[in-house]
Length: 350
Image (cartoon, rainbow, N blue to C red):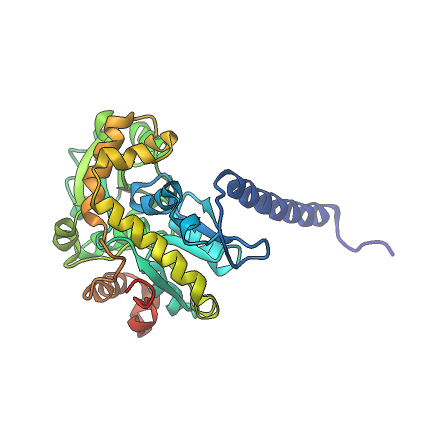
């Protein structure tokens, strides 16, 4: 029987199929480049964890735990994968491609409002670790969030935590989200190039991108949220950020594995607390320096270390701060009463 699809329709259908194949191939290739060993929950025996940027210092505990051998010590087989933005890591979890995500806790609230139940099981950080910067060229007209109106501002990805926090800073300072343009530029050199070329006037990013940007004199800091004090000043409280979060149904069905993962990560947080930035940097892959050199990378870690918890426990006042911040601009959160007790658990870290 002759197909009723026109040639253009057949081509479009083939293109969609090809896109899907390429996407799965990319995910597989990413996993092969960041694999590790131990016990797990996927078909091949691995626990696959997607990280919203393995080379970002805010997510440093993920690779450091692997480098220290703590996953292996606990007998859990972990495969670390990476995406450029937290929103893409979140998508991989919801779609079932991975069993866990290392990303911002705020996604658990956003997902609950969308009918998805996920929870943080290890809370790595109590501050965002994010920095709002301005390009050297735009510094005269962009002196703070009140000047966001009419500007193009870089974020790692649309719907990412950098996007969330940029919107909050805008609305909190009298600028509507419709009055500026968020631009997905990733992190690292793509972010810095966007600043230098003028495709964005400012944006939100993390270490080591911040230190590299400053060293290249491509921009300066507007709002610094790398420390608990910086979080309180900008957001009105502690803002729990990087965490290991998982679908609640998977957690409930694999408690022994989650307990092993949590123990490994908490051991890493203890190790970080008792070692210098230089010692931490020496354990990490050299390409995580993003071309800035070992000394600059160690400084980037030093700038960010205060954000990390020592025990993986959720700060008692943190979830309420996140809910308040997101509800400032997100219609989903404004019209939905999030049950914060279902967005995290300390069962496995205590």
